[in-house]
Image 1 (cartoon, rainbow, N blue to C red):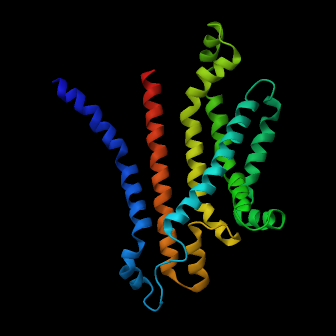
Image 2: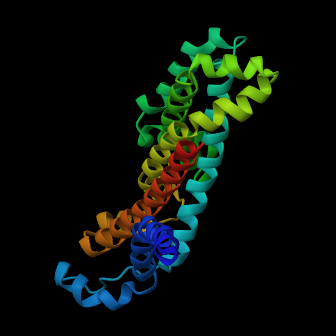
Image 3: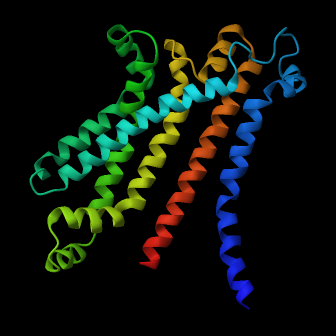
Amino acid sequence: MNNSFSIAPLQQKAAFWRWPLIWGGLLLVSVVGMSVAEPLFRWVEPDSRQVVYDRADFYVLLGRHLLVVGIAAVVTISVGVLAGIAVTRERGSDFLPLVGQLASLGQTFPPVAVLALAVPVLGFGTLPIIVALILYGLLPIVRNTLTGLQEVEQDIKTAAHAMGMTPAQVLRQVELPLAAPVILAGIRTSVTINIATAALGATVGASNLGDPIISGIVNGNMAYVVQGALTIALLALTVDSLFELLQRQLRSRLSAA
């Protein structure tokens, strides 16, 4: 009887990790063994002399892609969550509509347009695509931070104040933990979208997984396009499944609490 109870949580944890491991494994296979699938890509592009992108190793492109998305994510999470917290406080409530509009403004401009405007100022390379990703990924984080904090019931905050907590303690120990699943959902959306959007950086000299796609479009080689798109899709699915796992763990902890 005790063995069945001890095995059940392990099986549940294994089920949670199933999809991250599957997508991560497929991503690893695609990055390391792309050349093994040359016969398949030869079928896609039978008339091309070269069907496997080899100007840079895919694991190098993957690292560059993750670096760009990671830097943009750190900035957007920091700015978005702090802005959401600031305007949900009494002193900053007057700026709530302004923050919402500024965050929305980033998604009214297509990333291509942001790149076109940023390149003359910032030059070619990684910086323009990071700026574009920050602007494009800010809205989901700000919106979900506002929603999560505003949905915390007033009775809970009142009870926390009655227990002698300071406003900072209420925010840190009550509001943010309760709002965390909603905030994390916004971060998940932002990061997943930016994984795909980061491929545009290849058009301005920021080498990443967009390189095979752009090269394939320029040279009319669909095999290159498929390789870049497949790797980006597997990366997005891996990261998204990891966020889903984290959201489930947060929900289970809140339910237990």
